[in-house]
Image (tube, rainbow, N blue to C red; front, side, top):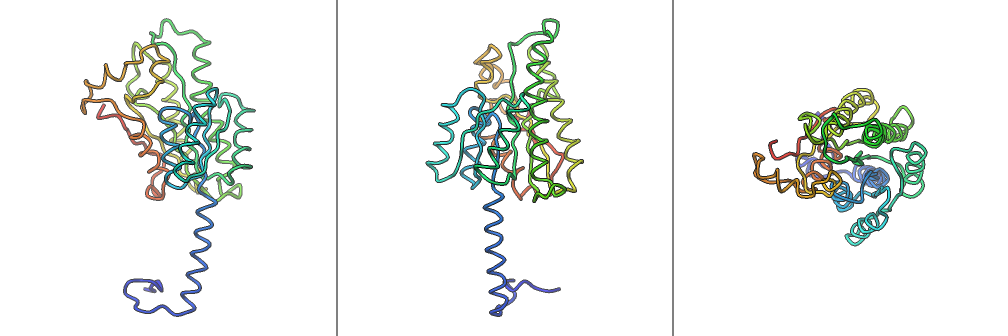
Amino acid sequence: MARSPFDPLTRIASPAAVATNARTHEKEVLFCFVMSVVLVTGGSRGIGAATARLAGERGYAVGVNYRVNRAAADAVVADIERSGGRAIALAGDVSSEPDVVRLFEAVDARLGPLTALVNNAGVLEQQTRVEHIDADRLRRIFATNVDGAFLCAREAVRRMSTVHGGAGGAIVNVSSRAAQLGAPGEYVDYAASKGALDALTIGLAREVAAEGIRVNAVRAGIIYSDIHASGGEPGRVDRLGPTLPMRRGGHPIEVARAILWLLSDEASYSTGTFIDVAGGR
């Protein structure tokens, strides 16, 4: 078996081998720099903000997407820049197809070729039973949580797929344990939207696996985030946390670490799979 010129068992590398390896290393460094661009949708708060900050720490140029709260997105960008990273805030409502197209074009122009997408943007509404849910509420939930994820995935595939001249990449969808548990009496519509996201994860993963793109998901559990206030119960994590096997709620950074692992080369043979970050729930 041929050895690398820098194999530990090879005492001396020839000058030609050293030069060749140096040129290869330069190309690899340039490749990694160009390819380390991630877009985090819903990146101004909660899990999205924690993911954006961690991605910045780990060398990604980060597109921090927000819908209305520019100040929160700017704060995330500032945190990344203070730690020596590169980031930009990008307005856009993922439920709007024209907004999604503009969002990805902005990433192209301002950060460079996309290699990673975190489909994190999601919404829920006031806790209620199915008998009180109307069509307008369903449209709002599914427009962001499902339509938005599909549209963003579409744009990412168009850029990353080797079929389209891309160099590959990774997509992580931020799902929820509610997709499997159903969220009865609270958010069955939200749970259903996350179930659709799980189906997208599996189908798209198999569709683009041979095109250099890995697609995985993280199912978050009871996590400290202001999304619970949107449902009318800001203290929901404190109520439910002690009932979990781990006896506590989770923190956004704990979900972010799983997301960054799935984006990384350490997960190079993982696609169409899920990590539950839910304290055993």
